[in-house]
Image (tube, rainbow, N blue to C red):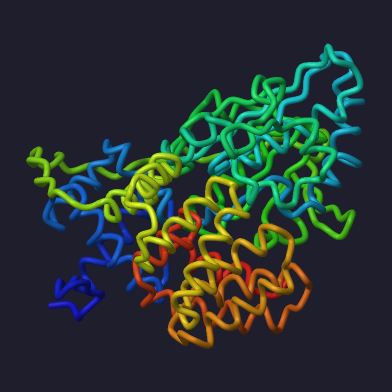
Length: 474
């Protein structure tokens, strides 16, 4: 018998069960987890088995069968870092605009086509940013700019295809770019139709192959950020070979700050400019050979199970469910349909969160301050007020409220996470490492409702991985 691997509500999962889950994830998604992730993986296994109405053993057998694509996509979304926004790590996009694309324009002068790929594109911000930068660099309007974004999760790809984002997603976007390429729409910002026309999205699991996607020499630029750190060594090496081979000679590969291919990667030249590293495909160098991936025999899928019975819940529960599905407008409608003047702290807090998610930061701040008038020691309200203030560029004041939230509730992980990310952005590396280290520990025990409201749509494992990645030395 294995020892206890994790529990929720009195339900336990053995270490053997978690180990099997890890093995299935490695085989089906190419994902790697270490022993420190066992608690979070146990929670995910419990949650997903419950959601599908299967016993845990049946769930793992069904998942291992390899033909359960919707569930693989759900796991990919929950287990990845989706902390993304337009022009994230702007130094890489400055290199793209000033170095990489001008060189590729010269190389493509006869074809007058630029092709770019975003691997692990999440909800689309990176792919659209690539298209915006390429559009601004292209010398003539008759050039063709083509951007492909790929991700394993259909849910995030559906969000990407809507091309509508909150003000928070545009927090690093230059004002001139925002005015030219984004249009206000129902409290959000919609990507300009000319940019949308240049971008398409495709579901792809990097543990599998796709001959068309990885056709040799077709891309001028490939971005693959915050993905390699998740993968098993085999999956990582295979993906690197595929990306290298799919680049045109002289094409460029941009990775996340935590990813390194060493000083002499096969077929690539490490380069540095604008305080960032990137790679260039060596001209005349043959593409690295990718060995065929031989999948192990699959067990037969488990028999279909009846769907779990639904239960009737109230407005708060319905709104929380919609929030978890990132259906913010519908959730906001449910909350605002309630009785006027009702003062229930958790309902006011959720109302403020939904207003902020819809880009209505001023309204969200008003509701949050009303909540603090009722209970000035409510840690969650101080955290939410800080989110509103940070989104409105009052960062220093936001830091004070994050610190107060952490002081009022020492077990509250989310303000520690935000303080760490802000410190990292300011270049305060030691402070960032300290805050993100604390957040990483606290996230193991963070309440599910807090993760849903303050996690930006990211699960416990993804937030933990974010702390680990952003807290690492650079």
